Length: 111
Image 1 (cartoon, helix red, strand yellow):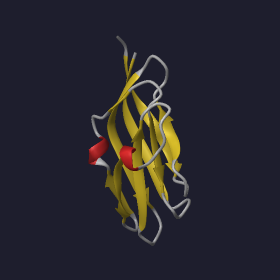
Image 2 (cartoon, rainbow, N blue to C red; image 1 turned 30 degrees about the vertical axis):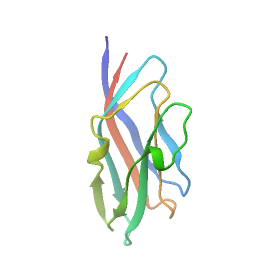
Image 3 (cartoon, rainbow, N blue to C red; image 1 turned 90 degrees about the vertical axis):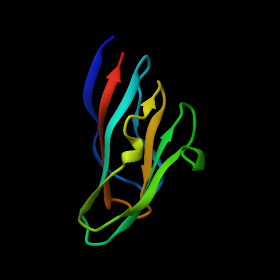
């Protein structure tokens, strides 16, 4: 069994629709170690994060966090830490105001 610690999401600005920012590869189990949202603007924005099962869709059943990201701040999404993604499961997120909040994540892929 190989364990590869890595950045799962390099850093990406959220869009107004929930889209996948990381999907666990085939034959791989992923453990999320850290997930953050950063707002570099001068206005607070609400964002939502989902852990979605393979072939599923972002929605109420897969939502793990929704909240305000204050202007010029970073929020750690503690609820995502140590969650396991099976092959095809993915991390999705959205912010109704596009290009205002950045998402980053790191973890371990186990093959």
